[in-house]
Image (cartoon, rainbow, N blue to C red; front, top):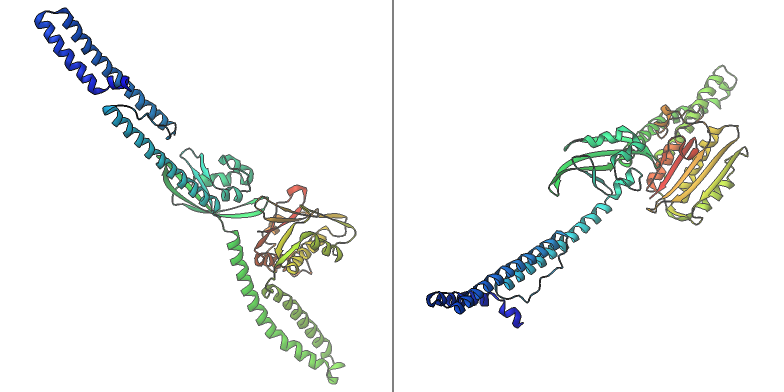
Amino acid sequence: MVYRLFRSPIFQLGYLMIGTVLLTIGLMHTSIKWIVGGTFLILLALYLYIRSQKRLKESCNLILEAIRNNDYSFRLPADALGGAKSLQQTLNEFGKLMGEQKQAMEQHERFYEQILSSVTTGVIVLNDQNKIVQVNKAATTLFDLPVLVTISQLKKIGGETIVRIFDMQAGEKKQIQFTTSKGEIQLSIRVVKTVLNLQPVRIFILNDIRDEMEGKELESWIKLTRVLTHEVMNSLAPISSITETFLSRKDVVNSPLYEGLYAIHETSTGLINFVDSYRKFSSLQDPHPKPFYITDLLSQLQGLTIVPESISLTSLVEPEDLMVYADPNLIRQVFINLLKNAVQAIGPAEGKIHIHAYMNKDEHVFIAVSNNGPMIPDEVVEHIFVPFFTTKKEGSGIGLSLSRQIMKLSRGNISLLKSGTNGWNTTFLIEFE
């Protein structure tokens, strides 16, 4: 402490003043002793000053280097004297404030990252070189990728079509469709521009509007079906009733009119039954969900003997105690529709149907129903979920559309995967959120 006191600015000033006085007296009296003593004190004062300035500069460099390395815990010793002590205290306070600011910024970053990772909207941030700066979990989920590091990764999914969307500029909006292992995805894309770390970036906002579009389309079909069935039934019911009355009259039974009236009656009755089947599509019962095991449902399907012996039906449930929360009666109907379609597609030949149920990392349950029947033509694929569309002579065209409606009511989805997925010609994928 005494040593530091003799190096303090006060003593430096004292050495300088005393040395100057001694040197002046020595020069006036030509005294070598006084000249040497005065010169020594002046040089000592200059040496201590230069050394203190060097130490102060080193201290400043140390704390600046610590700040550059994001180390805001570094502190200068508080035992300096005079002005150096005041400056070091100021630098320490500055370091403390910077540390507090860093903690606040880190908390804000974690907060925004949590929000970004929780939203269902995909967000991708690109710099001017089209390199990914940031991407959230929803975006990687939309593209069915574990991680998204470069734009070129997306070529495997949709080729140049997807890659070109990242040439969009601020204010632009687009919609694209592509297929992943989870089925068809329909994205709405919007771009905004901002500055991040003093660099311009573009933020791509991605929303899967498939459910919304399908929901609106399904709602339109239901409304149309209700109107049509109501009008058709109102017209056919009297015709069937009147012809039935005439057919029971004795003067008609053996007359030439009988065959014509019988044909009208049979046709109207058939049309009534045909229209009545469409009512199932527009008046589906509300689901009564409850938890049930997938294995139990598959066992029930095995007992219905929907699949003939010429077709091998296998299943794999991972894990074996996999459960879903839905209406088991409605979900059973979905599987019945899919199995019937598979059997009809395979035909009389030998074939295979495989059901694979599993859970992904997001705890969504997926059930794939696959068969090795003929591939569905591309011109048919886009219409298979349209109500009343069928390629079968005796088909009603409501099986798959009804299945999609059931899955919508069950807060799930059903989609057709690309031909050849996992080695199967046809695979329908059921998803429970």
